[in-house]
Length: 87
Image 1 (cartoon, rainbow, N blue to C red):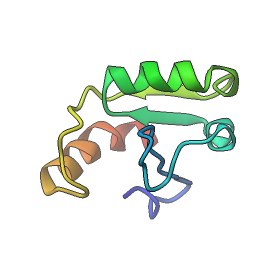
Image 2 (cartoon, one colour):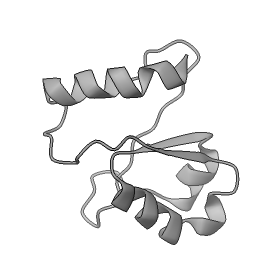
Image 3 (tube, rainbow, N blue to C red):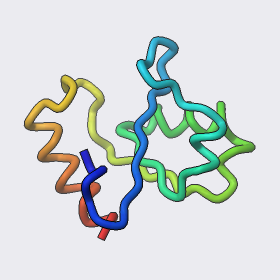
């Protein structure tokens, strides 16, 4: 949802085994900044990709991961919490 922001390159990936776009070492190494919804996601990311996380900063948004894809309430929360960090 932030792909159209000027100067921002984005990618989206999941940590669940059935993720449509699974997170990879290459993607983690590419990232400067990684946002996760929950602390459990951050722990899972750090455990699985420890070697690849050398330069990326991981930010936990503390947003429960119980929203539907692009649910308006989630979009509003992400704009409020992520938006200022991308400016």
